[in-house]
Amino acid sequence: GAMPSPNELPAQEMVTLSRANAWVLDLRDPNLFAGGHVPGSISLPLSRSFSTWAGWIVPYNVDITLLIPQEASGSRGADVARQAARELAMIGLDRVRGWIDADAALLAWSATGQRPHSIAQVSAQSVAKGMKDGTLQVIDVRGHTEWESGHLPGVTNIPFGLLTDALESLPDAPLVVHCQSGTRSAIAASLLHRLGRTDVQNLVGGFQGWTSAHLPVQR
Image (cartoon, rainbow, N blue to C red; front, side, top):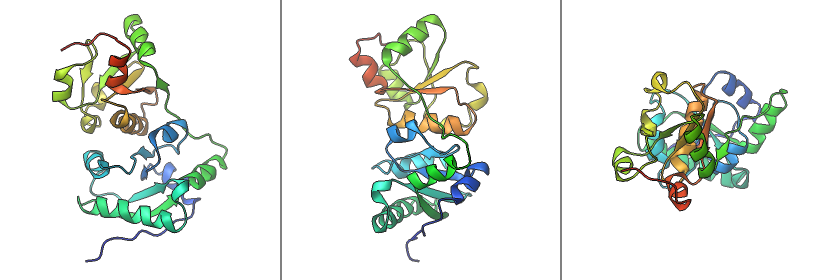
């Protein structure tokens, strides 16, 4: 009946996990994740909404490995892993097999001769231009109530937890995802990259960034 206490795993194991498309949750800041991450991993920062977002997208019948930020390595890394595993267990995601230092995992992946993946971050002005030119398709991954209260003109609303089911219906064109401030869309972009849509970009600042740039809003 005790709460889980995951063990630290060798960094080299990240290579096997990535090639097997295993479920790996990267707890670093989303900006660090966007700059470079091991293919197939999911950006899921350890915030107040950690278990909420995990419950939306992580299957309940899979083993989970955690990537812990370098600043939390050592004994503190074990504490962070224990906290994350506890929050996951509280919603039934209780198959956390262990944790790896995130930077060490990236080095292990790079040692194979392959580059880490990245997710492009685009400004509101660039997205507005792409929408006007027809070179970008935008997906609003907020909840429907948020979308109804104001959204980018003409964009489709697919709450990010439903993206996996909607994968086949997504436009066959370069995609930009956005949420209210950028956190959920960072998770959504990482999920879509994992599902093979590596053309997905993230709108910096989300809907707040769009309105701050005084661009048009539809209600």
